[in-house]
Length: 153
Length: 288
Image (cartoon, rainbow over all chains, first blue to last red; front, side, top):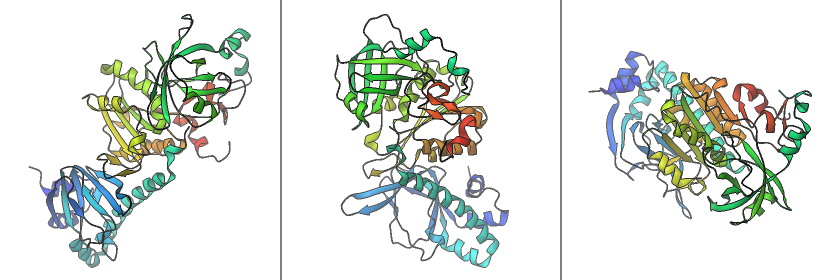
């Protein structure tokens, strides 16, 4: 049976993280399952966790009164969901909803945040890794804004 | 590379033949999306047998209106000529109103092809954006008709919204196959859409293929192709194993008129399918 530590160690996000930090992350981790249409978090709520998606599909959504729920992007197996736990005021900016049965590892962001304040090496490591994810998401969001498929005739 | 010598290799007879359209009758018109349609055509005289390689295009003439380059979107093994295009300009708007029995002039096929033969023994990754799926469909037909000759076959397809998805029924059939991996994503969707949302480039890093033994074929808007190629290279696919289909204002189709010049190339003759390694420096130039 796969242990949480092994799953985290093999994931791209935690790859090559120093052993003590990996153990610390494992201590903050737990398995979690979401049913289809279940909200994982809602806009405005306190952001105290982030998720490593192991299976399933999650939609990041925003609600507009005249249009209903608009999906901004979807995340699937292997993706990291949520970074608002790292950035004040630690509230979610969007809704996250499981589109199908979704299994994930939840990591206690509040606990990790405290550890990052105590150990800046850990804080820097995590920030570098999240910066990479944020950069990728920003790039794809820019391409989405370009509305590129409308251009080719 | 195009040169003065290249421009004169065709004999006068070849040039006349390339410039003379053949009469084709419309057998069927199929509306794919709000602004995209497919025409199935049959040659009228029965004397001209058009054979083409996946990736090539024809010059399609609407009588009294004008001529446009359109990629061939059908099966190379089928006797029916198939074109899929979007109604965006004068010619294609008129074309979209044509019906069964109407006639078109066809010149071609022209240009270079997708490296399907070269992909034998390799994984094949097809990345399509919007109407870019149409020029790639013949290569997928060919791969699937010799499926055992290829490794993993992956189709990654992105469109603007769910209603812009081309060849919807066929995509469902392809998705149901065990020997073909199909992933579709859209840029925008409401809560009724249960599939992926995000640009097609986001599908590349998780797609199941071995980058060291992969041949990639990419077609779509130029910006999308640029970022898709970068993502493929980031995954470890070599620039020489990535092909892109370029779109320019093709007129003569045989490299004489110069309308489709792209740096040192003529897209109609040296393309439309190019190796990424050959053109990557041109893709980021503002003016060429």
